[in-house]
Image (tube, rainbow, N blue to C red):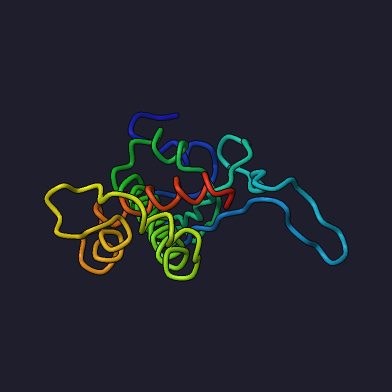
Amino acid sequence: MSEGQHPFEAAGLGVAPFRVVDVENRVGPIRYGNTVVGAPGQPMGACDYCGRGIAQCFMVKGSDGSLFTVGCDCVRKTNDKRLVRAVNREKQAQKRRRQDERISAARELLETDGVLRLVFEKMECPNPASPAPNALEWAEWMMRHAGYAGKMGVTRKIEKVAKGLGHE
């Protein structure tokens, strides 16, 4: 590799500058017609730079139009600030989407599961400064009015109690 040459360029993947054009999660099992391949959660993508199996595939385009797939670790190793920022933004957005899904699932469980509601109703309010008489009213109020961190705190509490009740 010559001085200042981008590692992806040196590997023959294309010509710098590079940009992330798409992101895809490729995990098993994947169905091809009547055939199913891969175990649940198994990475089903491959990094064109290092050859390792990857689950989160970043499609990168070179200035010459070349298109290749790499993992986040290989992007970070390049020290290409623009690519690293794009990868970090996408990883943060995915984390946020997963947390939003958890909050929605916890909110729905609290609204629909009678046994869980009864357990929360009998529990003491976890916040002594709250005017809520029990954990159920506190959790409902938090899910409507709290910020992100507060909703995640209630979500973890709901998940813990639900797990104790034998829910997944």
